[in-house]
Structure formats: C-alpha cells, structure tokens
Image 1 (cartoon, protein in one colour):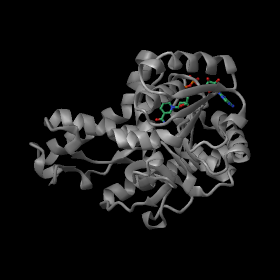
Image 2 (image 1 turned 90 degrees about the vertical axis):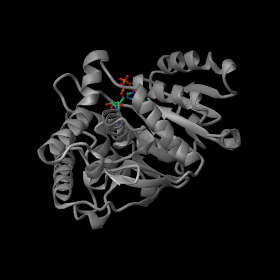
Image 3 (image 1 turned 120 degrees about the vertical axis):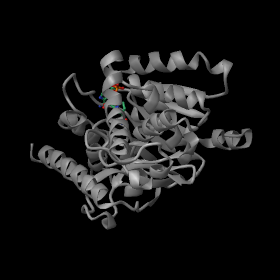
Length: 324
Ligand SMILES: NC(=O)c1ccc[n+]([C@@H]2O[C@H](COP(=O)([O-])OP(=O)(O)OC[C@H]3O[C@@H](n4cnc5c(N)ncnc54)[C@H](O)[C@@H]3O)[C@@H](O)[C@H]2O)c1
C-alpha cells in the first residue's frame, strides 16, 4: 500500500473485532501494523480481556501511526463499523476436527449476528470462527443484512500455505505461484491443480516430475497444507498469526474497494452443481460491498467430485446441527 492509499484507508475506516482471544487480538494487532484503518474496536464479553489486549496494542501506537483501539463489551460501540470480524468461539480440542465444535459455536454466532443487526446493519461481516463454512451459512441465515455483506475467511490462509510450499519446493517466488485451495476449510479441502500456474506456465509442464511422481508431489503438498493448522496447534495450542494477516488482507480489500480475488466462504453458485445453499470456499472478488462477484472456476471431473464431497460433508454437518 502506498502512502496515498494508506491515507485514504485511514480517513474514515472503522473495523471492529469480536472476540479478544488469540485470533481476535492478533487480527487487531495485524490491522495496526499494516495500517489498515483508523479506528479499531476490540470487543469481548469479558471486558478486562478486551482491555488487556487493546491496551497492550495501544502502547505501540505512538511508535507507529495514529490509530485508536478501543476495548469494549458494549455492542453499541460497534455502530458505524465498515467491517466487523467475528472470532468468538471455541477451538477444537486435541483429537477433534473443526466440524466437532459446530454445535457450541453456532449458538454464539447466531446471537452475535442478531446483536450486529441491531447496531451495525450495513457493515460487512467476516466470519473467522470455526468451522467457518457452516458458521457462515448460519450467520447468513441469522442476519437480515444482504447475503453479499457476509462471508467467511475460508481458505485464504490454506491457499497461502499451499503457494508458500510450492514456491519453496519449485524454487520460484511465491508471487508467481497461482493456485487455489477450495471446498471445505478443513479435512476435505483440495487444490484445483488443473488451474495451477507458475508464472504463465501450467504447473504440470513446469514441474520437474511426471506421472506418479507428479501425483505424489501434489498429494504431499495438499496433505501438508491441510495438516498445517494441526501441526501448529499441536506445538503452540492454537493458530493466530497466519489467519490474522489473511483477514487483514480481506479487510483491506473491503476498505479500499480493491476488488482482489480470495477463496472465501460463500454460498456456491448454482453452476457448481452442488445446490445453492451450501457454503464453502470458492474464489470471489472482494470489495466495498463485500462479495462483489462469485467466480466460476473451471475444474476437471476429479475436482468436481472433490467439490461434491466437500459439499456433502458440510451439508451433513449443518443438517446434524439443525436437528439438535
Ligand atoms: N478460520 C480460520 O482459519 C481460523 C484460524 C484460527 C482460529 N480460528 C477460530 O477462531 C475462533 C477463536 O479462536 P481463539 O484461539 O481466538 O479462541 P480464544 O478462546 O482465545 O478466544 C475466543 C474469545 O471469544 C470470547 N467470546 C466467547 N463467546 C463470546 C461472546 N458470545 N461474545 C463475545 N466474546 C465471546 C472469549 O471470551 C474469548 O476471549 C475459534 O473458533 C477458532 O477455531 C479460525
């Protein structure tokens, strides 16, 4: 971001982060470091927690830019937010997947959305809490704001993880690695290899491998990508820095109407042939109005099958929650 863009972003922009835990506080900190906005409200039902995190971040403000971080446990403080990031909820315990905590987090998200509709009905809402795909679906259903104003952080981080691995393994700058991780943000996520490009060259042609070796290379890359969050959580108990920067990029794209493409959690286009209710991670243009346009990815028959598998898993999780 150049100084002109930074000045534009910093003039009127207000971002609220709900949940001042590991993820929410890291997002607030990343927003400050990346100078994404002028005002941040860090909200938690436990005010001392919001205060502790906000004060800690506020201490560096004199060394950086003029940004105001307000701790809060009062929903009224969220009024006029341009973007609200929702990070409340429980993390999966050891041995649990993200889908296992759906029931616990769904109730929280429903009540949060009702409060947000009262105080900030026009804000763009980004859901980060897991399992992010079904929780985004529940958030869309619980809220009366237009669907385009709500999306989940999806597989933005997974895509970054895969690009980073490919860049390292193929010895290419990550900026020249173009590929998407789509489907569920979770176990059934997959890479759309048929569209992967290194520079303007198809991955299959660029790779030094062929046949089974190429398949093995791709399999190892996607497995490591999916496992990555668990590998980190096994060591430090949670993940937060990666998702914080991924979310800051989404926030920046909204505030500056950048129209960047990200794989976020949205209701799939009917053209994907998986129904029009399931929410999963697909590429979209993100701008001032939230989801500006959902994109249709070309995919081969194997990738269509994987997309259907993700949709089935997510529909089952959603339906089992709805029956409880
Ligand atoms: N989408 C992703 O890629 C991604 C990555 C990492 C974590 N997450 C998810 O983010 C969520 C938060 O993780 P964390 O590590 O920050 O958890 P955490 O326990 O550290 O923080 C959660 C915070 O939410 C607050 N909270 C709970 N219910 C609330 C309510 N009703 N109103 C207001 N505040 C409330 C708690 O007081 C706590 O401070 C989890 O669901 C986690 O799985 C998502």
